Image (tube, rainbow, N blue to C red; front, side, top):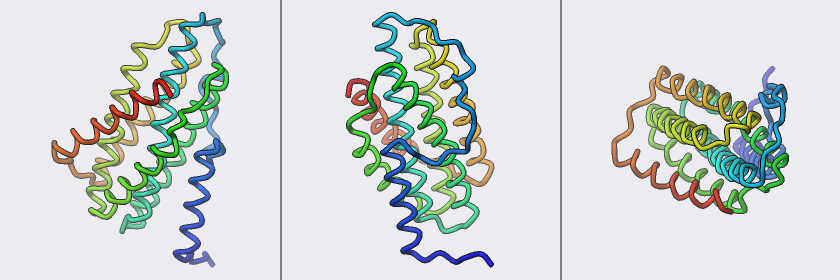
Length: 213
């Protein structure tokens, strides 16, 4: 017989996810890191620095994505939507771990503002969930669309010699596109233009800041 989890159980589970996300021990799907099969080329100092800065932005984005999904799953009304959000979060954890490992290889740290990105995104996600499941899924889809655009810009800026980082970003691009498509197929609503613009503004602040710290 499947155990029925109480509100306290669910809050403890979410608290555990918060700590694992910020500490770098997030639960993943177990997929192979796409960069493991790619030869590591020697990067000069400027190339390594740029790659690390871009990956710090991507890592911060994955921290925020985790918080968004967890906030949405806390307030989602439909069990199927909750399960969809949980599945997407675990796949995003793959990205989180891959980005962190690449940062370690490049000798750089994650953003010192990750806890702030997490808390802010958690609140935004919970608010989106309270608006209703179709809006929650629409928010998920729009988030992923904007992430895809960021990844595409990073792929253009990335040094041509950094094949490991490129392999990670290419897989992230594929996954994020699928998440957006899936959310729409499950009934996600098109968000109003002012909300999309607000999301882009918040994202711009996060990416500009995480690039440096």
